[in-house]
Image (cartoon, rainbow, N blue to C red; front, side, top):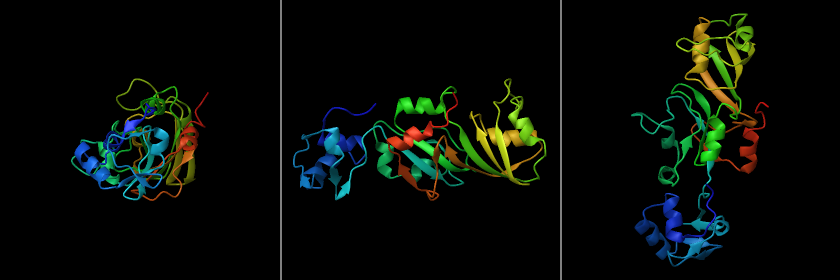
Length: 245
């Protein structure tokens, strides 16, 4: 939910993950927290959402209040989880992001070996829209294959009749465009577990690399692997530009 009411300065900074109440109070007393360039001297000073957009901490603009949505370029070897023993997507973000209230959640995951766009948000309504079957936007992938593409693959994927091993419901139609004999781009309208890898396994092939470069009308662009950017309202709207009727 968006923050609409004024908050105490210390509570504001604590909720954004900048430290404990005592730690941020110390920063405020030391003149590190400023509004329009002027130090806020009292931790109990009420800060409105509009003022928060003009506030700085140690000379830098503070992070946006909730709702916050970011786009991350996930490298290979990173998992979209908080509980894995290896490197996780949260390790790629500033430490304070893990202490935000409400916290950031992944809106659709990529497996450890896959790369590309991952969305993270603290907006529950947006999270639901991104993953709900009736509203989630199409996702665009580029895959390289171990073996040459079978000529009938695109037709089979588009038919909406392919059954994955262990499942009882056929896949929704998937658009496949072959770039060459071993490289394809795909558009998915659902997100089942390891779906693309299992689709090609059903065709007797294996996926060597898998990269998600677009969700809805929002492209990953030139965002470097391991980095992120905060999305604005226009970006979020673009996510749903390609949602089917």
